[in-house]
Image 1 (tube, rainbow, N blue to C red):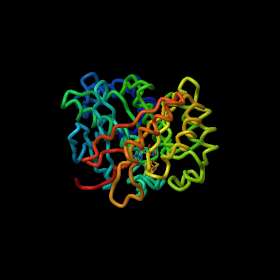
Image 2 (cartoon, rainbow, N blue to C red):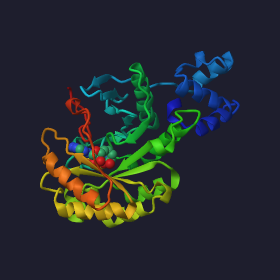
Image 3 (cartoon, rainbow, N blue to C red):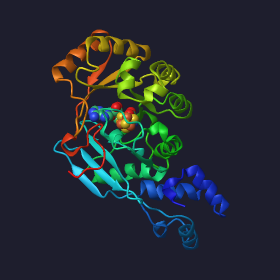
Image 4 (cartoon, rainbow, N blue to C red):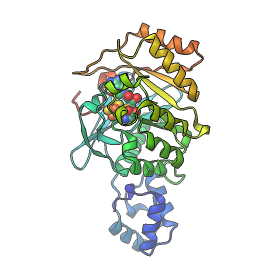
Length: 339
Ligand code: SAH
Ligand code: SF4
């Protein structure tokens, strides 16, 4: 069994089944996640015999980035080659007061949003729990090399997190666990393209923040760029967000600005109305282009006009600074390429 694939609770049961005391689980997770010791032999508070027995039961395989690209703005993209040859990417985004890590949950993505490079590459497979948390551990180690500490996690890398739901939940459990990564709920955000029933379940089972990739304010337009909207139309999506617990009502709405498609004043008015329903902050995302993209970015002046309409309606609207574009590390650009 791979130790990075199981939560501390499941490790406890596995240990009990094999004649170990329950508390060993906590010792082991502290060694691997907090002291970064990846061999049972070095776990000095466990007897030699027990260490040998543990090594027969479990493997400890931390993920190693195959390549690290550093962008001129300090953004770093880590590319991992998985055991079956698939490649996933993680992006470290240093900012003034925090350092955010953008984590992937699938190799590729099955949802084919028209503006997303990851979607255009197709779906390979779900990531395992260890492949999700492994990105975080490897990024922590990489960030520390330049004196940084990862403070925030966003599930906005490759893939749709809510379509890899069980593994996402276990990964979040490990990320929050005091004896593993010890992140706080407030520092973790799951971004979804709008899998309505799973949004409801996420709200019931976790306390993490929610970001919704809205991108269009009518079904007609949303159907054109996000095929998932045919399964979960706007009405279903908005109802699901209604159910997200009140304490976390600061749901973020993401809105990628596509020239002459979703950037009119009428779009802004409708978006303001939706944002007010949840007291949501809106993130306006300049479209990051890629070879073969079917859209063009809205010019910055027009993005600012759009933002001003939202602000005039008392909606907090920020324009997201695009980071890492020169290394294809920006939103929607992830996917295997040499650069
Ligand atoms: N699948 C999830 C999370 C990963 S995508 C989701 O869709 O929310 C992370 C964010 O990047 C989403 O808001 C997505 O819509 C946005 N994005 C995708 N392609 C983009 C592009 N080419 N330019 C800018 N943002 C993009
Ligand atoms: Fe998948 Fe998100 Fe890209 Fe859509 S935007 S294809 S859901 S990764």
